[in-house]
Image 1 (cartoon, helix red, strand yellow):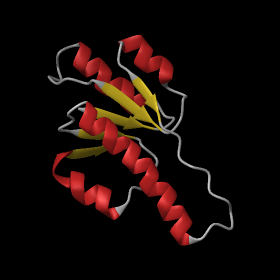
Image 2 (cartoon, one colour):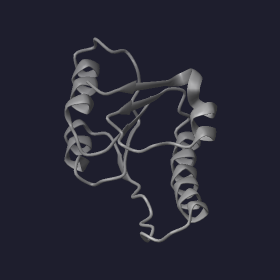
Image 3 (cartoon, helix red, strand yellow):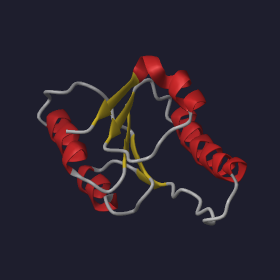
Image 4 (cartoon, helix red, strand yellow):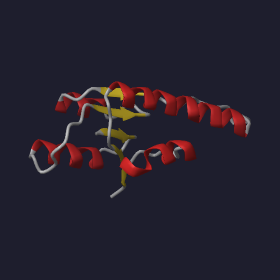
Length: 115
């Protein structure tokens, strides 16, 4: 199971503590984030943390340029999914709008948590 998270830690901690207490039975081989803010959480739990920042696009960027940046970011995420043989994706307050294609590829094995 891969966890994708942005800056807020409560959903990430909830999942990791449930795993630690054996309430959640799964493997979590990595955490992916578009910010470095929660890197210490990965270190605290001994889980590799991958910071994949989103490309900054200029304010006057075209829709196509913005989409290209989004797709490049998602391609980096996909590489990690393949490398770690990910079968479940948890969006734990991952504050990015994902492309329609990304959502369709992962719709059967993605959980979105925003409590």
